[in-house]
Length: 80
Image (cartoon, rainbow, N blue to C red; front, side, top):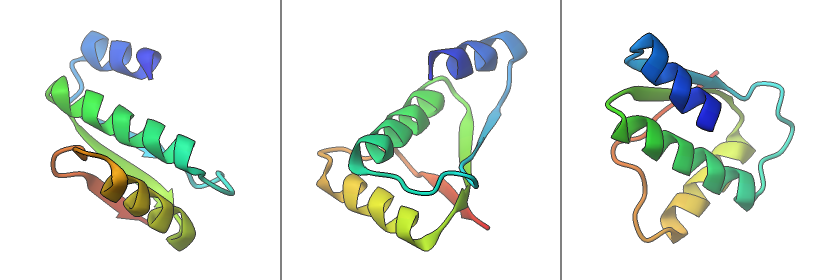
């Protein structure tokens, strides 16, 4: 996450795309990390798209977001 945030600052990017197409499974720990990454990107003033999400992974992420006290504002989830 730190490298991604540093690159956003260095390039002045307004959009970050995280492609998880090749990720076979996402457990709750990974889902939590993705949510934190999206939140950090948005705090830096950029938007984030997570692409390549399969239905099972989407369910894990939604379940994790619903168990958090505060989910990231307006997540921009994209599926393939």
